[in-house]
Image 1 (tube, rainbow, N blue to C red):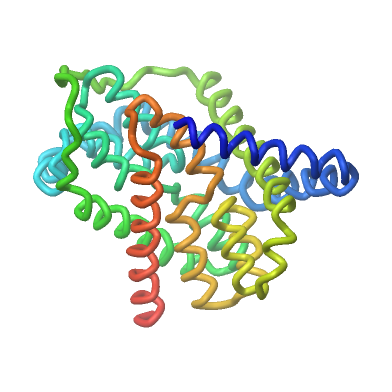
Image 2: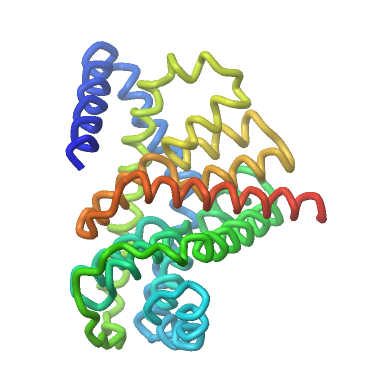
Length: 306
């Protein structure tokens, strides 16, 4: 964790120096990030966030996940609670799965072994970002969105199987957890949805700035490669540039890899939450990389079949 803090400190100082030297440019870049959020993410994701909160409030996610709790226990060798976290992560997107996993571990409801395995398949993007923002908004084809979403979910599933035998030393006993959904009124759900989408916008704008700081490095590569490298830092910016530099099936495959890897912005959020687990950073990054590789393999298969 100390190395992570040193790396982050150096990164922040480097970005700040660039902002001091080129203030006008970075003000424009920040505005571009907010514009990309407003045009590509906000219209499609905000309504979905709200209605998924309504479903959660009604207990729908809980009831569906209970059906799959035993299969998850057998397939992934994790607590039955992993089904609940998996389905919540799928409908909510990054970094909800990592946060729920860390919270369940800290509260004693899952073991460290459970948590280490769950991070491999419970860290996913949401359907409205993949289908709405990327498939329809950026690639202008909803079919592409469904291909990416299916590949992403299948990638998470098989990634969980890949890490099912991880056995770190456990340091606590599991306790019973009541999954009864918290009742929330209409105003609270609207407020929570608005705060969530504003947070997403802020993260996108910030990492637009980070990507611009590394532009001299990215410019050393052809646009077809640099757009993917940008996606490894921030998903939205990467997918926007992929849609501009690549087309058709190649764009679908590249976006699938970027979305499943999560980008540095999402990974840093998740790592900060998973600090409670004392989980090696390299392990989580490896899990995201293998998730990206498996998802990409499925995407290649699907685009060949369609």
